[in-house]
Amino acid sequence: MTATAHEESTALYDIPGPVARKRHFAYGVFSTLLILGLAGWILYLLFDTEQFTATKWTPFQYTGIQELLLTGLGNTLKAFAMAAVLSLVLGTVLAVGRLSDHKPVRWLATLIVEFFRAMPVLVMIFFIFVALKVHPLPALVAGLTLYNGSVLAEVFRSGINAVERGQREAAFALGMRKTQVMTHVLVPQAVRAMLPAIISQLVVALKDTSLGYLITYEEFLHAGKLIASNLDYDLPFIPVVMVISPIYIGMCMLLSWFATWVSKRQRRSPKTEAVDVAPAEPGTLLPGAQ
Image (tube, rainbow, N blue to C red):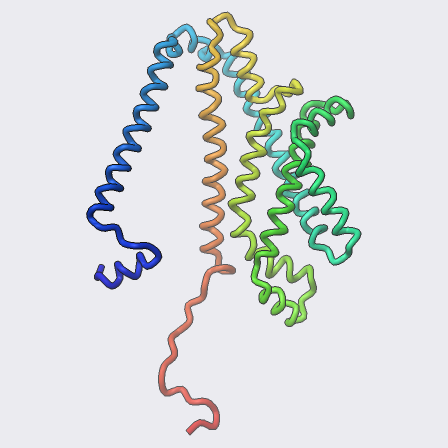
């Protein structure tokens, strides 16, 4: 790479000199040592409190405990799948309402979105479960749907409005109706911008499924709580956390990976991929040119 190309690639910031590079290297070494020290201190505390003794990990070898955890994980995934699909549908409906040309529809959609965005999700779940006497799973799914659907409605509306105004005007100039403009022009372009926010909100919905244990829904966290509180193995609370936490983190990372995969697939799609244009060549004359 030439010096000119190197300077162009770093045009937005000053190229660090020898002293700055040494300082950055020192910062990196210090940060690495600090992280390693923190990790070592946590491991020391875990060993010092005998969290890795065989007694506390013996329950996980029993078939009944494994089945309880798998059942709880399945219930968590079931609640999340239902809440995710319904939240996307509700968010789409509310976003369309907020973008409507009819004021009553727009005002009603705005009122619903602002109300459920401001309402704590736990309050909604408890209200549906206690006041409306709904079973735990529907109460949990309904609370998650109302909250996350309202947030996603704002994500959809903001993403569509972020598309360049000229795209909308050009589509209308071609004689397209509003529905066609939304489905064929605005939404495909807005999806890329909206995808990270959508996945982030779905991760929030996945983590909020743990609120189900407060209404006796037998999800993953509820299963871990039963293991930690009802077994006479010196209360293996920390081992339960060490088993459950990586699974939650793994599911959230899987969602992020899925979003990255979808984004890359969109960039390779023929509908969104840029078309190479042949360079202009001399010798082509317009009609009537000499």
